[in-house]
Image (cartoon, rainbow, N blue to C red; front, side, top):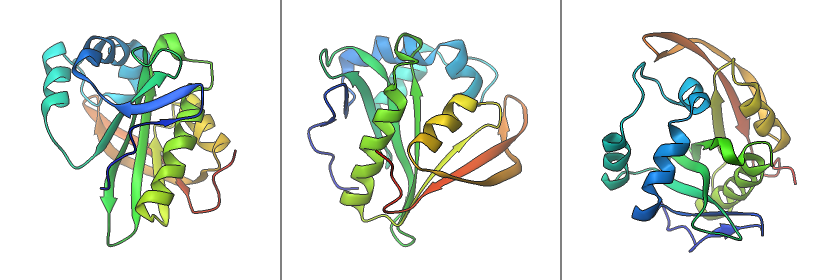
Length: 178
């Protein structure tokens, strides 16, 4: 994956690499009940040690902090690009937003920034986004950005000790809405 520019910003949100000093806010935001309900597949909540370990572990995914552009040390959530397939020119994108940043367009603005960057920098021809059918807020964010709902993968994944359906969205070059 090519390196991300130092940051991606629109004057309100700032997408940047995670820093060690962000870990307490990363844990606090992701430990929220709503994040746990929709984004964490295990029954037991993550521990602070697991959050710290994930930060330290190198990987192929692009994981970014969503920060306040005016106060870059204030974390609002996270964005990631994962399951990149160079052969198929596609990747997946995901996000979560901390409770103190919800309802302000943070996810929508961040998704537009990162989706635009992935098409330009990675030469993608398809970007995928998934969410649970019980997550209407995530679905609204996807649709506001121009993603098309393609359908439901029934009993798609293990989630909270049972199987969960997954709603699939896609975005093709030229479909990102402002």
